[in-house]
Amino acid sequence: MTGKAFNVFEAALLTRMVAEQADLYAQELVWTGGDVHLYLNHADLVEQQLSREPEGAPKLRIPRRPDSIFDYKFEDFTVEAYAPQAHIAAPVAV
Image (tube, helix red, strand yellow):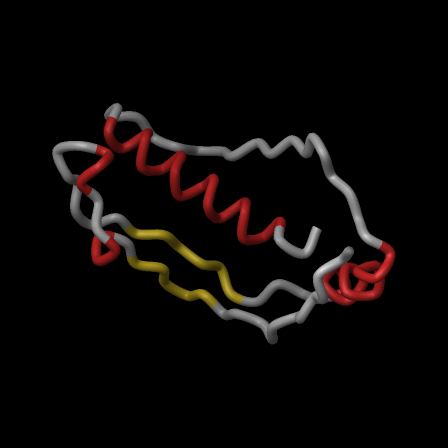
């Protein structure tokens, strides 16, 4: 659960890239969890994450459209109005 925000952003980024290459508009990302699990030693960390209020309204800009999905560069992406919150360190569950 603590990695969900990262996974959602990654999926949204890929969706936007594919849509751009296909001359489509990515409007919505639907996420379905398959093997969603929570380790007991992460329960308090998840509660902490869920209690946070989101800040800002981040926008992803892709100012350049390469010829191929494989030709994107790091510099092709800009994230505006992103207000990250403090890191939550989660120990490895064994």
